[in-house]
Length: 496
Ligand code: NAD
Image 1: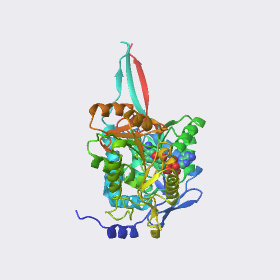
Image 2: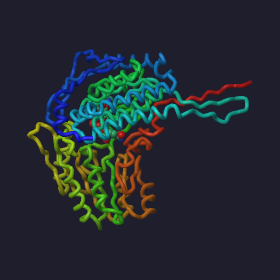
Image 3: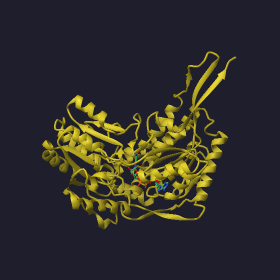
Image 4: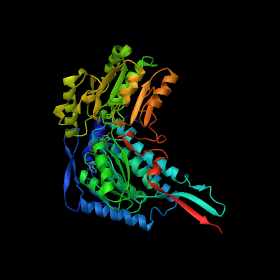
């Protein structure tokens, strides 16, 4: 297949029709208040669309539609094979609309088109397929019971699931919620980030075309307000949230203030990537360390933002790392040869630049550190590497941008202590040729995912994904994700 060019994507962008309305009860609607907000492309600062700014009336309407559809059984009451067939059609439509959805995602979030076409959109379709394929294969249990009883343990859909998601992988993170939640038979209200609402809005129409009944899948664009109202809503049974730890803490409070809805949180990270002197391949490790923090402009919850490198190999490793960082040259993400796009918006760019300023005060800048391509009107920051220490602000707080903190250590115990000395516990990695050290360190690292001699691998659906400590609770992906969207029921039948 011929490679698509920058000109191809620019032409397509020029004629793209963008939907900005909410999707409630099977139809697009303006916000009840009539309010909208400007959706700006970080590529060049251009306004892409006016997007419905949903509020209380929209939340009530979407939740009511979801509740009605759930109670009517138009979705939950279908047999799993029927739900599977419809979800597979939806995923196929996403794949048919790969170019359009990828373009929307790139324009909206600044992500490289080479990633949105290969990772984000196919990944979202795959997630829907994976849970669709699973749902007619998972069954319940017959539990041991007294002889006069039959005891069934079954899983039932929870009801109305609210999914509140961030902007770094807009459609992919959303699919990790709506894939398993819909497969399990729930009705869903999705609240995309105000920074990247467009693909969620678009796939709602495709869901409708695929045959997902009205009310079963609703999309409410807007800022924090609709997210908060969903969290407080008494008719929402479960809220699945991906985003910052601060907002995650509020979501738990909303549940406590309302109906104790189930709360599932995928939150921030400050993941350590430990390189021991017996690392099997320093070149590969350096490339992976660069990818761990510069892929997706560092807007990664699993970003390997703390590089812990052993004193003995530090100089040689950092020279390799800086070389690897040069491959991430910020440019127009519509160019298929560009691997680093724009930061999602001006606010986030300024936040990242603020951390870089803080780093300049107490750490040594090894690479990058500047805003670039300003004349485009877009928001671009160079990949940036600081030689720093464990207590520096840039080494402790989640930056969510292309800023790497390098920390030096001398012993394995020191590395593990530093790695675990964080409020977060999302991911971690260790590079070593020693099998015993690899397993022992992996065991000691307090993180939901540990990589050995690699970083960010295993991106398919088979591994549960989520965090220890303030990185959240529950797990996305894998069959375990179904646990979040189902209630366990014990049914005891007395035979005589
Ligand atoms: P955020 O917490 O600011 O926003 C997330 C979502 O919550 C958005 O849709 C936002 O509109 C909404 N929101 C904002 N205030 C709210 C409130 N008071 N009540 C309810 N909803 C509210 O996060 P973000 O800036 O969009 O995303 C970045 C964060 O997401 C980072 O911390 C990152 O680590 C985290 N993240 C985690 C994972 C994971 O799987 N662990 C994945 C991606 C991103």
